Length: 194
Image 1: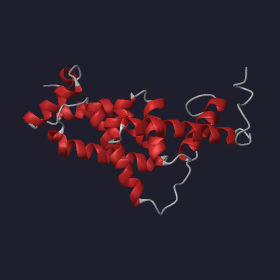
Image 2 (image 1 turned 90 degrees about the horizontal axis):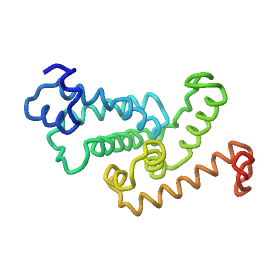
Image 3 (image 1 turned 30 degrees about the horizontal axis):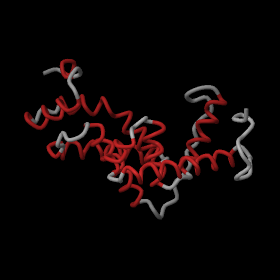
């Protein structure tokens, strides 16, 4: 079966086809379909391009080796996000004693200079969150995942996910306020006042 024929199949069908036949074409289509989302999630969790690429590669290897362990009890993407967060945790543990470099992104990349500055400010603020807060905040606010999906992907109870997101958002607001030059607890910036 050609890649073109496989592109219309669901994620779950592609996993089944790979597991049952051993043909790598369904797996290639599946991974190509989700590669950018895996990398983007890993980058936002780890804050470093090289580490995010390593995590993405680790996820691909895990999917290849453990596709038969996917039980179809949840969406494939939920399983994939769980593999991604696990790969990020593993890389984070390995690098715990090594400082994480802040990447320099050239101005104008991905939008106007103001847009680029805002994006850099948000990325830096996200790095200021603990990993236990950053992961669910990224999944909820940037990927639009439900609390239940985040719970399944992280292996954390739904109530804990909600709590971490709330605390993470408060901390993120503090960090973004500090980036705007406001004192902690000084209230909203002029842009958000009515």
